[in-house]
Image 1 (cartoon, rainbow, N blue to C red):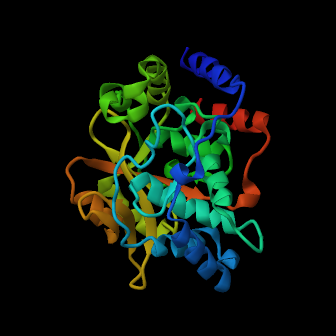
Image 2 (image 1 turned 45 degrees about the vertical axis):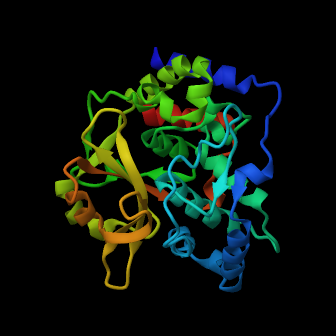
Image 3 (image 1 turned 90 degrees about the vertical axis):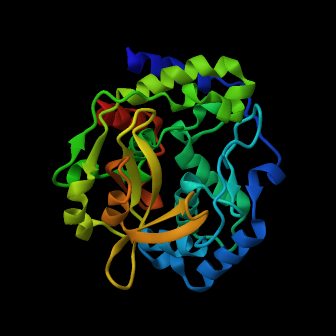
Length: 311
């Protein structure tokens, strides 16, 4: 029944008559920083690097930028791909590092903000498409791993590690319980009921995590640019935070993230050390980004992949 509800919602979203867009002044912040970072990447030929190392090159350029909450809530009604290189939250930090790395893999003499926005749209929205509807966005990180695996942008590899365990009986309800914190849900009450449908869909997903007591043993298998979802012990969602693995010169697989506590993008301690610092952290979910050449563009293949992944 959950899958049927999802398909009905998909049909409704895909039936949008016309794409609705917001002005560039709203959806793209930090254009001068974008141009400087991309110019550096071109001059140093970051395109030639494996995607994980390329992601970290861009992530390092965002190191120290200020933390800003709710950076995706940019309008009261129209949803749009967006970039903010002046202030980052945990989602936009990893997403924009990934988006920049994917963007420069497509060889061009000159890159524009629109090029990055296309990459953000590809990974942030179901089917990789946003027509202006808030419900098209992937709001829960656990779903992001399944969606992006199905579309060939990031392989969901959690179950490949020894000791991975499924999370059972999790209530997914943050968006509908805390709707007053989200501009779109606050200003469009008609979105709250269908949001609950999506939450039920996410709750039924077969989400695995690596318990934090087992993370230190598998740290040697982690790679630069791996996307790390921090699995939480609490109801509301499967994950409470997200960041990237960066293997520093000392060989340690550290957690790089936009930190609310530090109020900026930081390179933290080892991922196992970070997890052990918080009693609320249950463990981690791992995704390994894929090269642009592996992106799935056929909608049937994508849908078949998704059904295979979620069962």
